[in-house]
Image (cartoon, rainbow over all chains, first blue to last red; front, side, top):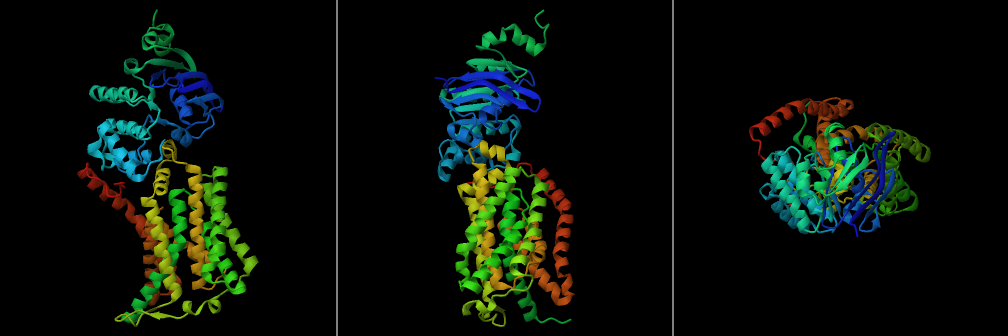
Length: 242
Length: 313
């Protein structure tokens, strides 16, 4: 059974159809890459899955349960966590506080002391244990991005939605990020992973979906996706293969 | 004019205790303003309405002032929840909520005038003996005296502000409120139930108005225009103390009332309220300078941890 199934998901912003009948499926322990040109609806789809945006049509099932109308906090309790493209740490909490707050209200409602303990574990895993008491404004870009992943991990989710978490990182930082994402699969967690860097996605993903102008363009293995003419055309323009 | 040390001390003490009462009134406002983003001036009217209900129950039904909380506390809680529900339903932005609450503030004065008339209403004669006689401080301060209603304000301010500050700082719900204040979508993505939490916070903020109202009714004669006298000090105390910081609002209210009272010793009392706004203007004028100094310090020591950052450990 699929962990997540999106069926004909549609999202309108006034007269603009950002998503137009998108289908997507994620299995347990699977990393699914979601790619597409700018404005193709990737982040919008992620937001509808997380419950940050209500859908205009279609259905979203998580673990066989219809979650289409559930609010984002209920989806977090159900086991869906997300990161944001532009890191949004809570500025008046330190690094540990950011992660512990996520742990406190996530899938398991843990006590304050348990949340702190879990947060320390998460910080160690993402390599920020040396910054536990630091002000979040002192973090570098890659630390901010890892903190986003850490906060999502602290919810102990079954599905993590990653929105361009490697964007803007140098090759060494990106490699560490890819290693971290791959380790999520080893935990048995599923991941939907949006990234502009197609090479990074193909290296990590078990399967990929390609969106174009709010619609499904193609899905398949990374090898199939990068070899498909329609995908190349969508990214590079119609005459790219000519 | 010569002022004796005793007169000055008594004046400052009275100001500090009156500031405690204003701190009680400001508590709900600073929480709603700071954590829910709603400058709810109607909260000040709720204090007065609670005071009038307390007055009615004490003078006409013979209730003890504390017992009136059995009626006013749930009633105010419901008013707080209903107002927050209304703001959520209307998806009210800052301007809309400000206009709405100010409109309700004006309407409440009319309602109070209709129900209780514009005359002064005092329940001093109906108070238990223990709440009427002045108490002298122990030696060597025995030349100073306080009244039981003033002490009541002090105790209520310490208890309510302490409880609110502790809850915000150390409880799960307080943590959720802080997260919600900073970034509601992020807090919801963490699993924080923002909508019911906002209703509860608003209800509890309004509940504090019932306690403040009881303290007001015990301390002073009531009249419908009282909120117009309170609003300056209460709003300035919230701003000076830092929105959403109950202890800050209390300290600011105490300092403002001490300054106002001291002013009245040497200058025309009718200008005393201008002291409050003068302090606010000075504070706002100093803001750019303090920001520059803060940025300099941060720039010189970029890795230094800011003291304002909250740690869980």
